[in-house]
Image (tube, rainbow, N blue to C red; front, top):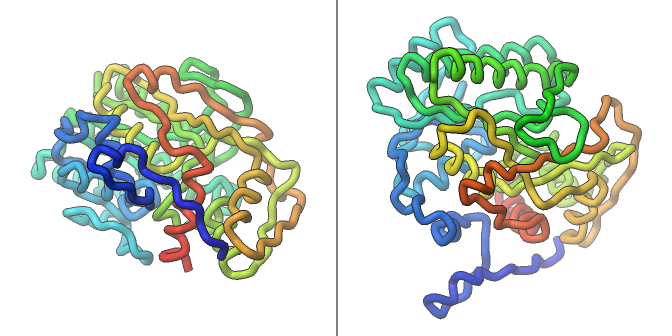
Amino acid sequence: MASLPIPWEYHSASNNTAKPIRYDTAPFYHVYYPYLRDPPFKRVLITGVSGFVGSNIVEYSKEMGVETFGIARKEPSNKVPRPDHMIYLDLTSPTAKDTLIDIITKNSIDLIFHLAATSIVKLGVENPYGTAINNYLSALNVIHAAYVTNTRLVILGTDKEYGEGLNRDENSPINIRGGVYGVSKLSASLMALAYRDQFKTPITVARSVNIYGPWDYDKTRIIPKAIYNFMNGKPMEVYTPVGRRMYIYVSDLVMALFTIASHPEFDVVNICSNDFLDSMTVVKTIAKYFSKAEIKEIPSPYPEIHEQSMSCERLKSMGWRQEISFEIGIPMTVEWASNYLR
């Protein structure tokens, strides 16, 4: 693997030190989000806690002194940050709703992040029934538990809910023909908004662009797959025609979620990025950090969205801003992967 360029923490000049930005950037965000030094939420429940985004929320919550309660279906197979309290629960089970209500009540939970979902578009093709059940029923149980306990809930949705198109905002038409994956996520979002409108449940749907960064072990996603293949001397296949997507580094996503959690007045909030890239550019950027990197173009076996982007003026109005560009985020991700992704 080629040597990585080291971007420097410009805020470290206050104590006359300069250290490289690694994948642990939590202290960096205290500069730009002062309220995170004393966060309004003290006890957070995270579904899908062993997944990519959940692991990062745990890591940053600990930096902020937030007590974390995590729900996972089973013991994680990979090394990930662990919450303060781990709970094993199948969120699609008939008793999940009542168990969630009990967990929230007994532990005085004041914020829920619902992340547990099938997050790969490809699985909507290979296992449509399982994808639909997992994405909708798990969300419904969490939504109802939040309603019964009147607990703040942020659900992580996806830009796929809008479908093809550029600069989609929160008032843009939704995509009811987005395939099983897209519609299963959209169904969960619509039920969340129904509970919000009818029962005044404090729920917000956060629709995000493509996320990348540390603790993503899923080698079906383009960035970890490319890094893994290049580390192991394997060619990386890029589907053609290439599509363009926005990409956001996971720490920016986590800060967006905590920012959104502090603004229950909004029903839907987009999380976007300044990095709007086609898949070939993404893979070639990763390839720069390896001495040998073979790329092959192959026709896509699945229908692909050609171009998709969102605007997030609503989120920016809350004080959030993107801090980690793709040029900085990719070497940080490669560095993490060199230690963990095997």
